[in-house]
Every structure is written in structure tokens, then in C-alpha cells.
Amino acid sequence: MKEHPGGCAVPWGRAAALRAVPAGVGHATNAVRELARATARTTLRTAVRVLVRTVVVPVLEQLDLDAVVDRVDVDAVAARLDLDAAADRVDVRRIADRVDIDAIVDRIDLVAITEQVLREIDLGQVVRETGGGMAEETVSTFRVQAMHADRLVNRAADRLLRRRGDSIPPQLPGLGPPGPDPPAPKDPAPP
Figure (tube, rainbow, N blue to C red):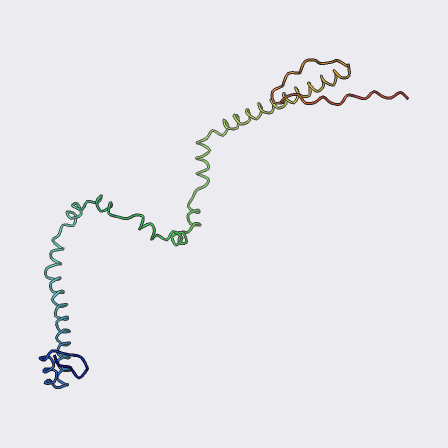
């Protein structure tokens, strides 16, 4: 190996060739090489265009695409799809920003929807059932309150008449156990 003036070792044959070729010839060689490459690229592009026009286009024109599509297994293609990855790439906010809500609302016929809902439900029956239930609850509440008041009157009468009630009064529904007796009336002091 012989050391090249640039400081690196090169094989003897190359070193001799570098010294034997004048500097201008190397530049000319590079220019010819680039010209050959550009010509080859242009020729290749032209050849591909000609090939597409003469071979590929006629083949595609003769091809029965319906037969090709019939041979495709759509289920197998769908099984290979990653729907989660596709959904992750969907920008829902961007889609929502593009939706014209006012236009959608303008297209809704609220009167027709309301009429259909009223036809589907028997509003009179709902009112009758609801009203009947409320009336029963109101009557029950009044009965319980009347029984409670009756019990209080009986206890007050027992005290006024100084009757002793040894028995515990019955527990009334909705009232709970009897509470403490009301305070005894005070005897008026003689004047």
C-alpha cells in the first residue's frame, strides 16, 4: 500500500491511476457519468410510459373488475381492519364543529312528533289513573287525621270526666304508638 498525498493509504493500482490521469479528465469523466445516468433515467421513464400505454392499459381494459371483486373475501378484509385504531384517529370535536345544529332542528317537525306521541298514549286514561290515586291518598290522609283527632278528643274527655283509662288505646294506622297525655287542666283557684 502506498500513502496518497491526502494522507490515506490506497492500493498501488489506484494510486498509479490517480497520478497518471490529469485533473481535467477526472472532471470530464464525472460529467459523462452524470450525463449517462440522466439519459438512463429519461430513457427508463419513457420506456415505462410506453410499457404502461401498450401493455398495462389494454390489460386493464380487458379486465373484468366485477369478477375480481367477486373473488375478494370481504369478511377476511374486515377481520384485518383495526377499527380501534381508526376510531382513535377520528376527531369528534372537528366533526361536531362542522354540524349545523340549526339546520337539523329546522328539519324536525315538532308538531307532528307531539301529535304522534299523544296518539300513542291515552292521556285521558293517565289522568283518570293519576287522579284516582291522588284522591285515594287524600281520603286516607283525612281518615288518619280524623282518627287521631278523635283519639285526642276521647283522651281530653276522659280527663275532664276524671275517668281512668286502664287499657292502652289501640294503635291507629299511620299514627304510631300513642304519645304522652296532654297536661291535666288546672282547677281554678277560689276567689
